Length: 448
Image (tube, rainbow, N blue to C red):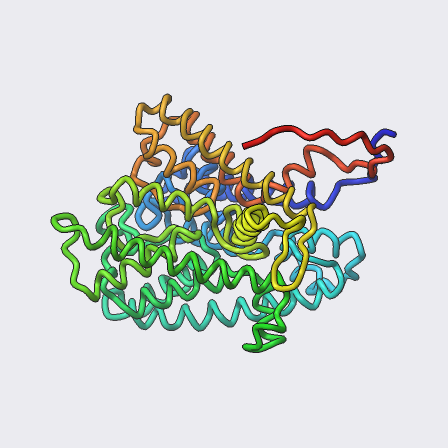
């Protein structure tokens, strides 16, 4: 039997098209003369790269955000980050409610796909709750950041900086407007500022842990056993990655003599921040060009893993990693199925996890090889940039602003792919298919 034809656009196509439309709109706005400080407007490629990076909450930049863009340009960027982080369709929900229009079943399915919700039932209530909690968290964090910035920047600018960095951190974007004295400095000047470090890392973790985890914790409190399997795996994997990352940076990187002149307190703060930021925020409090090669490779792995599904973070997602580990564990134990917390995980989930991992690794390595050849840069440096792009992180070793047109287009594609999600792209390209009506004979092959 052939494929079943679907009338109209699928929800995946709508999500992908919405991001494309938002990127093109942002590109047009950033090309306007008053979007840049010099009043000339950005070139098409610079505007496209910046709009893609902001919409896909990545953080890679080709122009210094603090000095190149005007207040209007910065507002466009942070608006793209907010909408892109929450999902275009999710933000469109606000317009539906404001207009008083009835939300049909088709729209509910699109909203479900836009935030990777497990089911369409209760999607309106969930999105409404997500938006309210998001606004509350970002407002509180913006006030706290404004207070921290006030002694140095004054009232008006500290308020704007509080709002900008609160949204950027919560949406795991990594854009900053702190480079008004030293370009591309990120949060390096505040490496020892404990309140700013704690606020930013809290926002990154909360934004990247996933909306469904929020709801589960809100509904069940601290009763871990009552959480859904998704929440248990997301929380356990997130905690494990944060702990492993902190220990790695503290003992194997920032303790290196002759490289980092940090006190014990600053080593702890820097280790914590760098363990959090690569998944997938893009802020940095240290000079990343000083990192040892093993640390660069370790950071690449963190960037590829990313945050949890249904969050503002990108990457392959924590639950994908958890599924691969559980599958390996079941093979080593000789178990016929993948089990966890008294539950059996369907084979379909394993196939999705393997497909997503293969896609991310293939794209990351393939793009790195291309950029390494085109730009004549070390493969590890190129790999760092491509992992940052496909994981929608935003960390860089400093080569992105100097890349040529082809290399920038490669990163633009990676950022877009990383935001819309591997499975969404697969389903859209493959199209909807009818269920198999024939089962072919089984035959084993040798692997390993």
